[in-house]
Image (cartoon, rainbow, N blue to C red; front, top):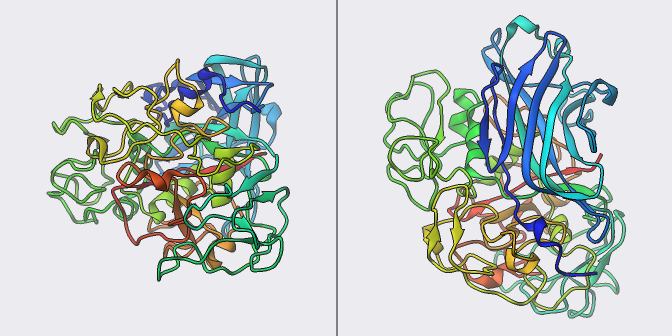
Length: 527
């Protein structure tokens, strides 16, 4: 198969758009949801568009999609709540040449769950590419089932996240090289391991088992060398959807702005607990009074003692949020594991496993020794000159930059920054299926198979709601104590070697708390 996909696949921008019931529109990373309305019959109507969409019948034989979900402000309860949509696809209206799949959450996520639809996938039904234009989309929302009535619905927000479809097919772990902690088929440390189904994977020093070298670290960042990896653990062979980009700062702002005050305090670093009215450290993820590490999420200096806070991006540091150069599209750093999984639960997504990370980057291709996540050993460190800083078209002066290393610009960059209409997969730094920034942006937080708490993960999906305190509440997800998560893909600050696809230097290690180089993205099982 060709390692270079059509260049039009690699100029991807991701985000979520929030719209009020009155039809106001907002934009994040060029996903635009406009003309939103809600009818008394429960029809959520809107238009949606995003750039550089595709469906292809040649390798990688996949498509991109929008994961769409709805939140509503319930005036009776005074909270934002998740809207559960109709379970009958015949109740929806979509444009010509598109398909729609229902995203169910099944009983078992939490004790109170029932079998309900938390969102939908909208995507092309024919082979073509270009700007996706979806006018007059109608989602069916039987709001009575959510215990509310039309008069109690104060406003509605429609969120859209760009995803890529990762098809079901075998793939290899390891490259045959000597990357730190690399996977191999025991006993040959230069062999690779084929994942050809979702069945249990044996771990250990027996012929044909999956294994990895002894750790050079005293704290075993590669894992505990135990197993097996159970049937239920998502191994990447089955098809799934993956966020096209890492979570951007506007994505996290949109998330924060639907939470209660208590939940907001949990999901930020600055003390914003009920009762606080004056905020010195207004850059709330960094807990700083001044901008640092290009983390621009902030609040006002004076806030209400009890009401939820309005957050915004202010990368240009002038105290005015939402301007054209305020970094809404910059990858969101300073995210802890609890922050990431709370966002994914709220979105109806789930965490990605480390095996799914490898599949998304390599696809079915034969491994290349010491390859980076874009499939070759070529690397061009990015130039320090950033053009249009903080804007939707923020770019690097370097052509063909594959990785961001060496403290470039003092922090992370716009998601998809190296993809243009003239770049191929390698120059864009893209994975095989079209996912951007799998290496060199912010560290990807994944579910590790190197710890028992990670191996217990069953791929259960988020249900759209959080605990009262603002934490994820899905059973079998690795807990907030970090015991089952790890870090992959390298980051903008550290050496390029961490960006090699088979490097597992920190695959079973997650530092406690938030970090300037840590972010992430989510996945969802294909319907």
